[in-house]
Amino acid sequence: MLRNDQYLGKTVGELLKDLELPVIYASDFFMVLDEGIYGMNLVIRLNRDNEWDNSKDYYIRIVLREPLKGRDYSIAIRSDKRNKNMNDPVYWTPQLQEVLKDFQLVRIFTNDKLFEERRILRENTTWENIEKVKKIYDSERARWRKIIQAEKQGMKK
Image (tube, rainbow, N blue to C red; front, side):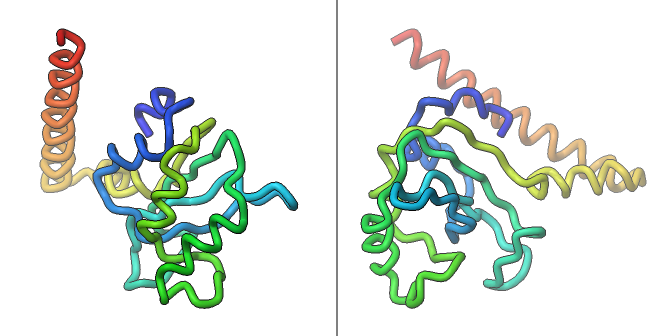
């Protein structure tokens, strides 16, 4: 989410390569009748065992430039036998990833659950939580330094 603007005009495949957590479900499909699916949530973390809860789980909402045709979507999700009735949400499948990988993104955003853990730690200002937040920030800073260094190396080539 911090690099949201960098993904505009990129493909779903490029976004998926950068995600650090696997997509578990796809849900809350934004459909236009007779055109197809223009957007969906990519659920990357469940807060309860295998139960989808839109208000509690972590997801990234993607909006596509062109619609995913309903027929292509249907074939892709039926490849997983757990997706029997096509109700929302559906298990993420390699076939769905393959179908979506070349679709361009016009917008991505998230629910705030991705950042809620840090907020809770910051609000409850005990020394223990301050140390936890510091570790999170130090870890993220180190990870971003590696990413930036790799990008600089790539630009030199």
